[in-house]
Structure formats: structure tokens, C-alpha cells
Image (cartoon, rainbow, N blue to C red):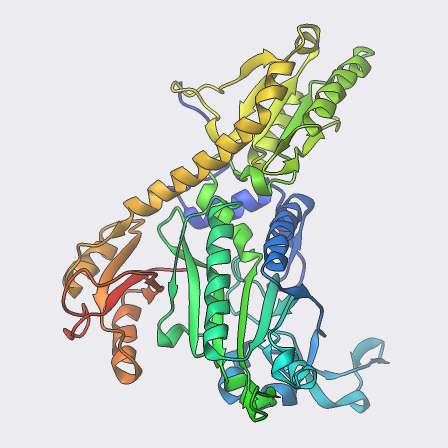
Length: 510
């Protein structure tokens, strides 16, 4: 038997179209009417909400406090840091007037309502938070300052794609100030490790953490570190970044303090963030040709009960049976939290309702009909293992108490297996044996989903790095990062022939 996929297009046929189909069929998001801005529907926002809750807990456990800063930032704040403003200049949305008026029956901008100073709609908050730090910081005793905010930001992207690159997106941005370079670097790497653990834990998404090359640094940063995830089409997704800003922003915004000897010093600062791009990463890491698969730790509902309602008097008894099962389930826990269980009471035929949850990626789906209730059993579908070897739906019937007893372990198993499948794919698609540019060209020309290539390099800078970037640009490749603790496998740089110091990842990327 050949199984029929739930989506109108497969990953192999058209990965980009498949991605959009998953978003639509899983009710994750939709167009808003404003170019580059999306409406996140409850299931999509629910996944982000779970990510936010779990990551927020980790952020606070590492000593940071949440706060909130304004959406509008005076243009003069950006003008203080030239490299930073240059990096974001083409993406800034700017407010210049504060009023509209009616003219000939149409709303127009009132030219008399021009602001004294233009306001930038927040693309990131280093400048406004740095200004606040300069007021808050007096003495070394005030350090470290460690804050985080959950907010929306606006970057006027030319080419947009839902979750991956939108004009407005949601994120968290952490900002800290420290007494020394050592303290600030320790913070930067602590956050990098936190992001790596979060991606590989709750998201079941394997990543490679490392430092970005000079040309890929955050504008104004001394060093930028990233976690890179491999999507099923072999492209890289930068899933999170942590930046050591040195004293650059401190000099620009006068973030200084009186040290232990009574001398004035400039603070060392950091910034770091992840965004709703992670939802896109989950889609492209775990989804299949039937839709989304959500790791149990971030699924808004881990178990969905679908009663086979027939609009008969027996429906009340069936719903009571489903409620009994739900009550027993939510008294159990997985990953240190009570199970999240939904009874889908909406009208509709059982088949389409089941497939709607398959496409949404609910980890476990229980179908319960009158015969199930009479026999004290449930029929279970696991989203990570939907089919038998001959292509039939793998419906598993069992006594309801047996299911309740094993549900936490099943969810833990699903989480683990999803990570292992993605990790195996990542490991299988990183090549380490390419030694020259001709081989590199042949590799990326000869495969539809070529994955990544790791090569030795000497960490070139300036014009030497520019030449490397141009070579790679011709192949539509970018340097992703230098993996942590990755010494060179060979003796010479792939690009220059100079002595190599480390490995670097090359890939096509989102």
C-alpha cells in the first residue's frame, strides 16, 4: 500500500512550497495585509509561547531580570555608534510625523505634525538600553547589570518568509554590562551554551555552536557567536546569536563606572537573542510530508483526544469517558510539568479532525469512539511514527489505564527519537573530505540538498577575508561559524594555503 500524504506538495518536489504548505495546513500563521508581517494563529503562537516560557526560565536561572524598553528610539541614539547604525541603516523603519488629517476626503500625513527628532522603530535595543545603563551605573559595585526583554522588533526586509525573515518578529534580547573583558566573555559563552542546550533539549534540534567570522559579526561587536541548525534541505539556519560588544557601545554611550581603585573605566557589554525564527527551524527540522511534527516539550497540547461524536445521545457518555481519561492524564507529568491534554469537542467528522491534528503535529492523538468507551480502551496514533512498514496508519489500541500509565514515558521517548533522527541527519550531511575549490564547486553543483562542508582555515581578516567571501558568494555559500573546540584537521588553510588554525563550516543558508 502506498500512503497518501496529507500535504499538497512534498519536500522532495519543492521544499520552499512544502514549508509554506505546512504553515497553512497546520494553522500556524497567515498573511496580515502588511507586507512582511504575519498573524500568528493560536497553534503557532502556542508553540512560541512554550519556547518563551521554557527559555525565560533558563534566562532567569542564569541571573538575569526581565524589563521592558520603548518601541521608539530617538535617531540620535543610533548616531552615537557609527558601525552599528551603518549595519542597520537599510532596515530601519522611521517615524517622522505624529498626526494625520483629512484632505479632500482622504487621510494624509499632516505636514505640520513633523516630529522634532525622527524616531526609529526598534530594530534592536543596544542604543536605548546602553543609554539607560549609563544612568544606572556609577560604581563597580553596581556590576554586573544583567537584563532581558521579550519584545517585537522591526527590520524592513526586502525578501520575507514567514517565521524565518519577517519585517516584524518577536524575540528576546538580553543585554549586560560587566567590570572586565573576562566577565563579559564568560557571559557571552554562557548564553551560547544556554542557546545550544535549549535548541537540543526542548526543540530537539541539533546545532553546532561556534564563533562567526569577522564579516558576519553583529554591527559594532568585537565577537559574535552563533548556533547553526541544519534544515532538511541541507541549508543552515542561524538559530541564535550571542555577542561580545567589548567597550564599543560603552564609549559611544558613556557607560562607565568608578573601579576598585577609584578610577573611571568603561564597562564591557554583551547582547544576545533568539526569535520566532525558531518556529521555522522546528518546522524544517522535524516536519514531514503530512505536515508539522512538534517536539513534546514545546507542543501546546502534548496529547489530543478526538472523540468520534455522532450527534446522538451517546455523545454525552463518550465525552464523559474522554474527560475521565484527560483528568487522569493531567495528574501525570513529563519533563517536570503536568501533561497538556486537549479534548477536541468541535463538530466534524472524526477522520478530518484526526488529520487536522496530524498536520498540526500534536505528539500523540487519541481517537475514541463508542466501542472504545464500551471496551475501556483508547486508539493511539504517535505523530513521530505514523505508519506501519506497509504504509498503513499505525493505530494502536490499548486499555485506557495502560495508556495513562505509559504516556509520560512515551512523550519522553518521542522527544528523544526526534532529536536522534535530526542529529543523525546532521552528522550524515557534513563533509570533511573536500580539499580544493573544484571539489567544493562539484559538491554543491551535484546535489539537490548538499548539506554543509567543513574545511580548515587560517581565520583571515580584512581584504584576505573579503576575497574568501567573494569566492563563496559565487557559489551562493556563506561561512557559518567555527565549531567550538575544532582544531584544524590539516596543516594549511583551504583558501589561502597559510597555516590553518581551526575548522570552519560552509553552507547555503536562510
